[in-house]
Amino acid sequence: MNKLFNEQDESIAETAKALAHPARVKIIRLLLSKTSCVGGEITADLGLAQSTVSEHLRILKVAGVIVGEIEHPRVCYTLKPSSINTLASFLEQINIKASTAKTDDGLCCPLENPFEQKD
Amino acid sequence: MNKLFNEQDESIAETAKALAHPARVKIIRLLLSKTSCVGGEITADLGLAQSTVSEHLRILKVAGVIVGEIEHPRVCYTLKPSSINTLASFLEQINIKASTAKTDDGLCCPLENPFEQKD
DNA sequence: TTATAATATTGTTATTCGACGATAAACGAT
DNA sequence: ATCGTTTATCGTCGAATAACAATATTATAA
Image (cartoon, rainbow over all chains, first blue to last red; front, side, top):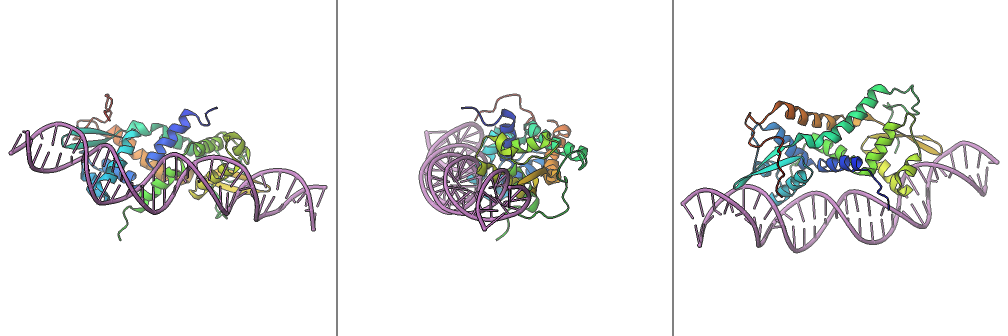
């Protein structure tokens, strides 16, 4: 059977998934704010059980968003910014589209609808 | 009880979640590639059941990523680029960090680790 | 070698997600 | 009023996610 989605779409979705939890966003913000990298401070800052935080860290590691370096008995986590490049340029394309295309060039809907959408 | 996460982190996570499935990424790419907005072509292009696609479209709508305008009997979908602004600038911050901070300024781990990480 | 940190893993539970077929809803045209 | 076309909703199922406590792991220090 044919694969439904291409590599790039899968990759973008995977990175997005890694960011798709407020705890993980908070972890990243923490790593952004510190000049030094944090170990178990992350657990303290999050207000979640240690095992839960460890799992969030694992997810971020698997996605390549962070890297962990062992400094026994701690682990020192660092951002790996290149991991988000594909997702970032995908979002960039959306913004380019926003600035380029206005409602006059064949779009059938206004790009920024001033009215509430009925759902 | 105290809220665990702040508004912005929740918002970023929500937007990321909307993008966290290859089918939804593909839908967005489709809307990027078309000058005219598509109706049910999306369903045809995805290779998923109509009800499944409809659900993905609903998720994107709820997240504000797309807008649907009824043109009976179709619905015309359009990107709403402003919806991704918060997520985009979050990613931007990560990149800024990447270009600013090198390994010399107090980081305990190299930003781009040339070695495979043992897991 | 034994204790002692910090982090990882395991087992469990409740919830959410993703997919589908079947059916409903909407409305313009006949 | 009925039909035809397109999209939305419902019900169901299995799989994945998120949380926690309890336990295991690991390597340095004593």
